[in-house]
Image 1: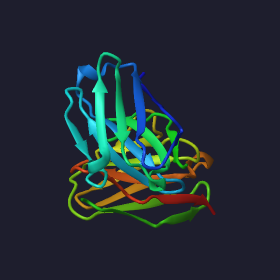
Image 2 (image 1 turned 90 degrees about the vertical axis):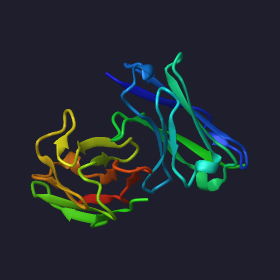
Image 3 (image 1 turned 180 degrees about the vertical axis):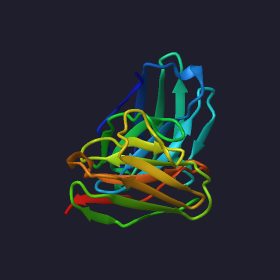
Image 4 (image 1 turned 180 degrees about the horizontal axis):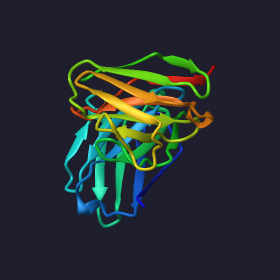
Length: 116
Length: 107
């Protein structure tokens, strides 16, 4: 059974960098075959796809976030990470990680609040 | 970017009745369309992929149809646990995009 779990600070100050990690259990990221994604949901709003990484480091980022975004993978730790720089209150959201092109499974999500 | 538009925004249906949710893409996504269910405080759950294939463990009362730009999610006989928000998502083109959601509420 594949499980994903997000982790990272729940509070980030404006202009700083938001950093999250998604730890994968039950399958090896390096086995290939799947994209590993980040998705976010602003409070009370819909879903926004952030970007993905493949096991070999191939990435695709949502153009709306591309200039501030870095997604990386560490296959030795079986996790992948998100860094979003120069955050503002508009980046306050629940951040999910998920596997695939259609997303299954998802992590439970982690709320990140941008506030001083 | 492909824009996904769901209708209606809110759908009020009585338990036991049928619910029909729609999703339209601004350009063809073939059958690369997924549906998700989200309940408050929970992550979305995959219901349907490939426009019509039920995900593992999804009850047969959920069905999906369509191709190209027009898609439908049908719930044949609503159970109490089905009242939630439903999202469609295209994975035919990058960036992947979601519809804005349909809230299915008890009538």
